[in-house]
Amino acid sequence: MRLPLLNRGASIVLDGSINAHVGMPASSVYAASKAALISLAKTLSAELLARGVRVNVTSPGPVTPPLYGKLGIAADALADTAEQIRAQVSLGRFGEPTEIAATVLHLASRESAFIVGTEIIADGGMVTL
Image 1 (cartoon, helix red, strand yellow):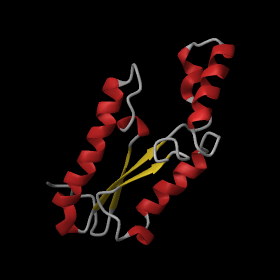
Image 2 (cartoon, rainbow, N blue to C red):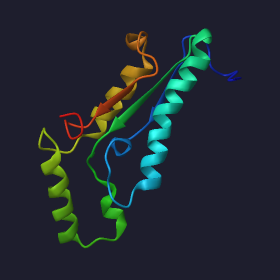
Image 3 (tube, rainbow, N blue to C red):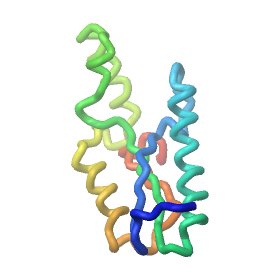
């Protein structure tokens, strides 16, 4: 595989989702695409290993501000949905965008030089516990 713009030691971080691990209704295509990214990270890691390029995935759970507000759902129904989701998160809250960004930055940094072909699930324990 040719990726001429990536230097030795480069890091690729793919944006996954916990939907790759849960059977959420009405999300089959989205979930399948996120599961494919996990497989892609492993395959690309093997292909790019000789060049020293690492490929990993972050898979966030529910994050504030939720995108649900753009779905045209009434505010009260939206609040109920958010509460149902929040109740499934072991930490009892939505993640913050900065928490997900910190995970991505870690995977992109030299501090994670020994991490390759891996998925980090940042979901407050929603799927992992």
